[in-house]
Image: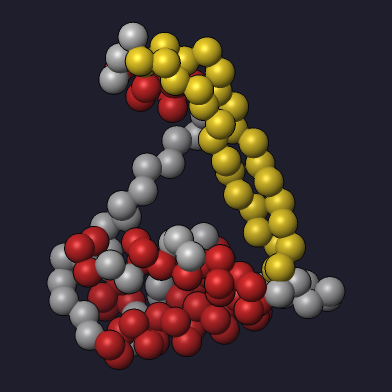
Length: 123
């Protein structure tokens, strides 16, 4: 996410964020996901990565971020260090500013989601 990359370099955030271990696995192709499922004993009759673009006001982008991604980015389990409420506050304050800076002339932020659609049948 562009906004997270931007704020990860800011001084109040950087010393802690460098100790963040990303909990997500992102593959480049549908075939890579198929391989993961086949290795776990699934037959995969369908797989497709679809790129979905949506446009939202910066406040809406914050809500979308808080509905999912924040569970990783501010989960102490994924850091090799402790952090306090100041880190969380700095993170939120700066991510909101980063989303606002991404707003285009129409006042909306373009979000691009790579969605994986896959059907798996356990053998």
